[in-house]
Each structure stands twice: as C-alpha cells, then as structure tokens.
Amino acid sequence: MVATILIADDDAAIRTVLTQALGRAGYDVRTTGTAAGLWRAVSGGEGQLVITDVVLPDENGFDIIPRIKHIRPDLPIVVMSAQNTILTAITAAERGAFDYLPKPFDLKELIAVVQRALAMPRGRRAPIREHGEDKLPIIGRSPSMQEIYRVIARLTQSDLTVMIMGESGTGKELVARALHDYGKRRHGPFVAVNMAAIPKELVESELFGHERGAFTGATNRGIGRFEQAESGTLFLDEIGDMPMEAQTRLLRVLQQGEYTTVGGRTAIKTDVRIVAATNRDLRHLIQHGLFREDLYYRLNVVPLRLPPLRERSEDIADLVRHFLARAEEEGLPHKRLDGEAMDLLRQYRWPGNVRELENLIRRMAVLQSGDVITAAAIQAELKEPPRPASAGAEDTLSAAIERHLTRAFAEAGEALPPPGLYDRVLEEMERPLLSLCLAATRGNQIRAAHLLGLNRNTLRKKIRDLGLEVFRGLRTG
Image 1: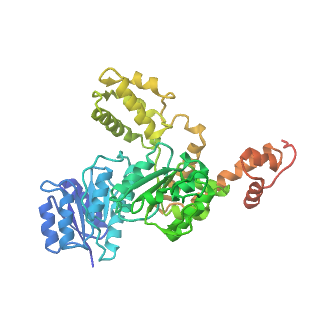
Image 2: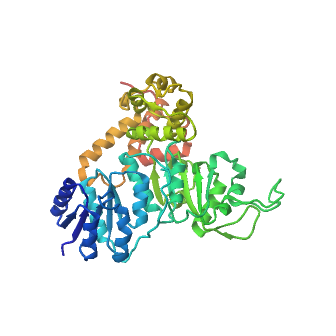
Image 3: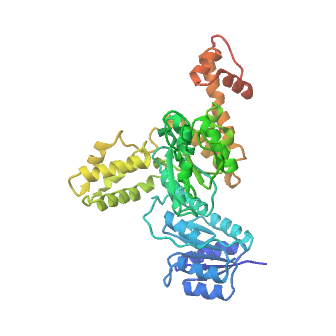
C-alpha cells in the first residue's frame, strides 16, 4: 500500500520540490499552503504522515500539532522551519512532532526521516507540553549546531545519561542546563559540580555527603550533591578529573541507583539524572589507568560532541549580536560592530571558544567609547593575529588527519567507510609515531617510553600489537 504524505507550506517552490522528491521515492503526496487545508485533510482521515512548516499564513504550525494529536495521536508529524534555533527543535519535540528539519534541508535526509516515521510502531504518543519563550540558552544556526539541537530535543523526553564532550568554553554547561530546563525533570533542582575545582580528598564527601565524625573536622552531617539534586539533574563537569575512589562509588550509583555517605552504612536510594562533561580524551585516560572503562561506558550512553567555535565561524555574527544585546540589557549603551571588525572575528581561531568571544564583546561594550566597535579596536584585543582558518593548515597534524579522512569519506561515497574507523585511525597514527621514537632513541624502549609519556609495559604491548620491529644501533643510508 502506497503511503500518502500531507505537506503544508506556503512556499509553492518548496511544495513542488517535495512533491517531486517524495513522488520519486514512491509516495503519494498531497499539498496545501495553509493550516486550514492541512486540518481539513487530517480531520478527514487522509494521510499517513504530515510534513508542515512552522510559519503558515493562517496559523502557526506548532499550534495545529496538538489538535492533530488529539484526533489522530498515531499520525507522525515532521516539522520544518527556517527559524533554526534550539527552541524550535525543543518546541517541535514537546508538541509531539516525530522530528524537526531545519531549512534548507537535504532531500535524502528528509526521505530517511519519512521512512523512519512511517516504520515507527503505532500507539507511541509523544508528550505534549507547553513552555515559555525563554531566552535562547544556546546560539547558532550552523549545521553542526542544528544537529545538536535535534539531539537535545530528543533527549529532553528521556532520562538517559549523557556525556558532553568539547573544548573549554564551548558551552557544555549550557547544553546540560538545556537538557534539564526543557526535560522531564525541569521542576527539580539542577546541581552543577566541577570535579577539577574540588580537592581530591573531598570529592566523595562533596558528592555523597558524610556522617558526623566520618573524618577530622566533620562535626555535623554533610549533605552531598546527590541529595541536593534529588528528582533533578546532577551535572558532573570535568569528569576526567574525578579520582578513582569516587569513580567506584559513582559506578555503583549508575548500576544500582543507590549510594552510601562517607562514614555511613545504610544505602540511600537516589533518583537523579546524570549529565557528565569533559574536555579530555577519556579513552586516553583509560589506557593509562586513570579512568574506569566500565564507568566510561555507563556515562557514555549518549555522547554529544560540541564543536569548537573555529568550526562554526558562521555563528559568530549571531553570537556577537546576542552578547551585545545582553550588555545593553545590563545598562550599557548600544553598540555594533563594523564589517571589518566582524571579518576579523570570523578569521580568528578562538582558542577560548565561545567564552573567549563573550568576554571580548562584553569588554568592548564597556571600554569602547563610540557606538561602533572598529576592526582596530578588535585587533588590539585579540591574543594572536587573525588568520583564515585554512592558513598554515598544511603545518598542523589535525589538518593532515582531516584531509586524510575527507578523502576516505569521499572515496566511500554514500556507503561510508567500513566500521572500526576510530581504531584504524589511531593505529595509523601510532605506528609511525612509535617507529620514529624508537628510531630516535636507537631502540631504547625506556627512553622511547619516557619520550612518549607512556609506561614501559604499555609501550611493549603496543610494539607487540602493532607488529613493530625494533632496530638497535645507528641507521645507515
């Protein structure tokens, strides 16, 4: 049986393109330019799937979704919108949409979403909730940020543990707060704790609390962060800095849903969602015995990588406007950047990411006397001369790896490279690195291990696993 797809969009060109693409994929397509036309078709029992724009001439597309869900709860709805913000993605999920696609979108991706929606078991009704139009927690319209918005929107409906990875200043806590503020636990507390900021000997007490007399100075019972976050979300920032003893306790919480206080004997049940974050390579820490592998897999249920600002320079203008508007709300005079100043910001590498950009703009809003922030003023504040992202790319290891992977994906085409890409890339890097270090130390594995920062036994195992030959003595030729 051929599925019928209902499309609502006031742009005739988009209706034509979607009709042709979905028609070629074997679907029967019926289109309308209004919410009223969509409602007539849906209420008449037509269609097995709805694709609707948000902005329609007679009604907001979000407003019609609850009415559709009321009369046909099993009808999947895909929302498309040019208002590509995190609130758009989250609102689509909260109203009960199956998925959200930012405009412009890839037709292959659209067809894949349609196929998944039609294959979804019936009887699964997404929750419909309202929320206020709060200020945007995360800014950006780049493709990488759009994908993050879609993932966040899906995760707000679950209690899955999330691991947020990204460089310092990319906004990991903002993402964690968005998961909480728009999720099922938004009426509970959000408790953030930075593992790197707590003395190692106090981490367990800080997280799990302690009993009176548990250690010197414990004159009263101490409430831990897990107890503070009960029924809410506990955000564990810089999880890679957590000491091993505390890792063991955290693993028990994730496995059994209970913990004991320091000095306590009674197990305490807990109902907390865990969101962790790190700017370190946890796999590297695991290899060196600094992070438990079993805990890594418990935390890494849903990995979410935040791109550095240099990878989404198209978002800089939106971020600048946001930070200037915030400064104006705080009582500072209105400011704007000239075109050359904005170009400089786009060319800069931003080692401190979004946090560095925010600090710069707020500083300019305070110190700049005129209404216009000039390129010269920006240039004087930047830590290094701005340069295009591609400048000197041939000199960086990451750029060489990126070029290699780009070729691999291009050669594979739509099929994508075979599984195991991560381990293969690591092996390709390790093999020449270890060979060069062994050659430089004339086969002296102790010196090579010291040079690499590895344990000697670890180096021996890598030499064996990679099948490397160790040459001793001077090379000739």
